[in-house]
Length: 255
Ligand code: APR
Image 1 (cartoon, rainbow, N blue to C red):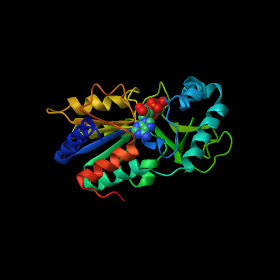
Image 2 (cartoon, rainbow, N blue to C red):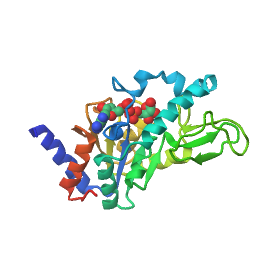
Image 3 (cartoon, rainbow, N blue to C red):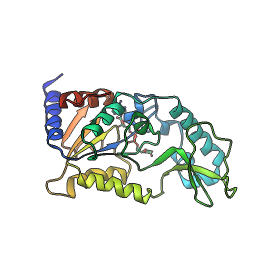
Image 4 (cartoon, helix red, strand yellow):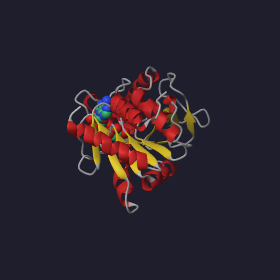
């Protein structure tokens, strides 16, 4: 380990040791080591698909079959994978800061919950859930395959994935909880996100600016990102290694 990395790690451990409340903003990178593709990598989901076609309300209106094909493939992928050591380290951290730890995730794969995390705010929705385009009913369908163009059992209208698409608002209550967690925390861990999608990325300034002094923001990512200039500490490498290393240094046992 180089001196710079060791210094950042020590600073992160010091901040976490002092923290009474910890919040996490996670993104696709935390699930990458489980085998779920990220969005903006060279071989990521947005290289193979046009956002307008598969992740906007207009795209769904135009070609619901294509959108369902995309989400059914993502559901099948999510069904076939397991949480990785990064997810498990976050479970161990929650047990350490019991009742004072929350994850706001942009991920829709449910892997934080499968790993055992309890306080998880899914700000971009969930692959497991459908929402009726007419009556609005939301249902958890698990990850088993769905029929082609699934319909609402109640009103017969077409179902859509309960995912927040581009040009749509975040679910109000979930987003309120996520902002609250960011506003109240002493450390915000920003894990595996390019931090380019708003409002999710605004949890960083919310954590830094709501109170005085603001939270210490620690970025864990393979590489530097748009958020790197804003954060206090950067830990660069795979989250499946960095997060367990942090736990080990903090004396937190990972299951
Ligand atoms: N460990 C840590 N970070 C990683 C790893 C890893 N093993 N692998 C990849 N990363 C990082 C990448 O360096 C990148 O910064 O994860 C980040 C993934 O970025 P994106 O693909 O942009 O994913 P995310 O930030 O979650 O995207 C936000 O965009 O399209 C939408 O709704 C979608 O929720 C998603 C949102």
